Image (cartoon, rainbow, N blue to C red; front, side):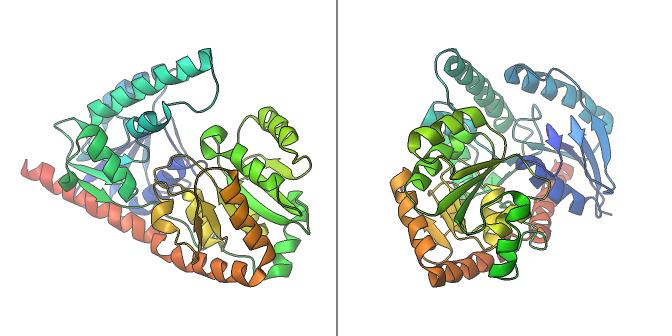
Amino acid sequence: MTPFSLAFVAHDVHRQGGMERAAAEVLSRLATRMSVTVIARSCALGKAPVRWMPVTGPTRPAPLRTWAFARAARAAERRAGCTITNSIGAAAIDADVITAQFCHAAFTKRFGGLRGGSGVRALYQRFAQSRFVAEERVAYGSRRLRQVIAVSRGTARELQESYGVPASRITVVPNGVDRAVFRPAADAAARLALRAPLGLPRDAFLALLVGGDWERKGVRDAIDAMAGIADGHLVVLGRGDVAAMQAHVSRAGAAGRVTFAPPSRTPEAYYAACDAFCFPSRYEAFSLVTLEAAAAGLPIVAHAINGTEELVRDGENGWLVPFGPDALREKLVLLRDDRALRERLSAGAVASSARYDWDRIADEQYAVFAAAAAERSRG
């Protein structure tokens, strides 16, 4: 075991969702080589040897939840007595190391902090975003901060531009993927055999979109794109406003060609059953689902945002396209009509995922923690 210990602060740590799952994958590996205390509302790490210090408090509204959590986490951190503290964003008031899985200031600057809706809902979203930005400004401006882990080069740029974090303090360590879990179907017959148990059409060209927060993820554009593709079918895996999106399906003329599936404990089956990955998200830090799609051999059609601009290479494992359904549709049609192209991009996607194995990512994060612990001991 290492001579330093880690207090890890996050709202939740489990193997569902995005940043929650990234934390679970890294901590389950680090806990075998260092003492880890998780300070969170929930923690599901199986048999990983970690200590969990539960944090309770209000769950709504979101600004009150984050404010109360950070203060309760501070009290737990003092009791834990660890060498250094790592926080996911501004989950903690301040920390020795912050892992940046989002930049609220950048999202607010580009999209006003809006995730869909109008009127009172939009006013609330703007207020909530202003509080989240203020919390991040405090966390990244703390004199305690020694290291920042940015999950993409784009996120690193945003932290420098929005909060003045020195480049010398930032290390880019991307998110990862378990390539033993997310992998292509053995062959075309195996892929088709997976569809019936999932309630998916057997013979259609299937494009997959995975995630929640559907307005930000661009689900409407994906629906509009699929409306113009004969024999095409869109699979949306995740949690969102199904009624609103079903209404949009009807308006777009895509009735019967979109499946909304709830979050699954075995999402790898959906990846293996589909032909392509359609991900028109407007903003990410580095989405895990694009890495999972690549490992599963799905050609990726996405926008040039944080993470995808590093992963996707045009004509090698997918394409980065302009915003809007027309550009999405153009590439999806190419994939539908050209099996040889689809197979070539599938192989390219699998190859591009190799760099993102979770074991390697955990090693890179460990190096950042060790540097922070050494700096603290010198200080």
